[in-house]
Image 1 (cartoon, one colour):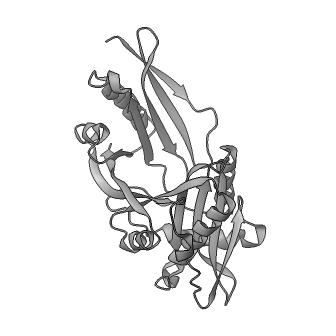
Image 2: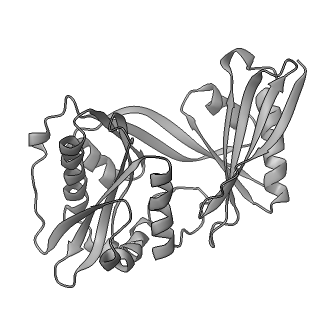
Image 3: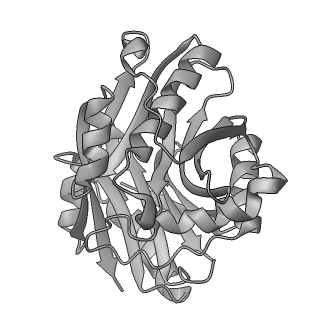
Length: 290
């Protein structure tokens, strides 16, 4: 088929990355597929690009995905990237496509959902952890907690990434604020529950939840983590349970909550199971080394 690959660009770069895009158009101008390449720009991740490719079901197996991939990979190389990552649902056409084109699997993920309309939220009771207290906020972190919260983000540094060349994410107050602002610009609601060490008032863990602006559909957990020196006390479950209860109270029309977890992250998988999350599907993170 006659095909045009049209390069595009996202006019609004983010605080830690910017995106490029390609549209595959048939001879009559009808869109047949697209590719998005996210180029990370923050220190510690300048080597990395993240790829998403989609081809209309009726147009597959005609070389469209390959043409889009070639355009994106060529740009990643020109931008000096050494790693391109892409994710696919296990067993899907995208899974087979990436595996056949030089990408190698580096991370396995389990996606799960908690149906709020069916969940027995009374079973998710308060389980206070001695020496700690919970605090919470909407949107941008309060000024008095900003530095402590930014410091606590290192709790994600040892998150299981298996073979992924993801680099190092360096968090500071500016980046924390920018991330919250990005959620707000999309019209979504960010709610954070944090665990605070009562001995010194520092944030030692957090659980983030993003909810659609109209309070309907499914919310998405963005991250739940505890600093290494405070693990083993039940803080992750305590924070996530509080987040679930708050979502149910504030958004009665919210249908469910979504989460994804590396298969090698046994502690968080156990937390999700204990709170009633049900696995929906598995995914594979692929990596192409340039």
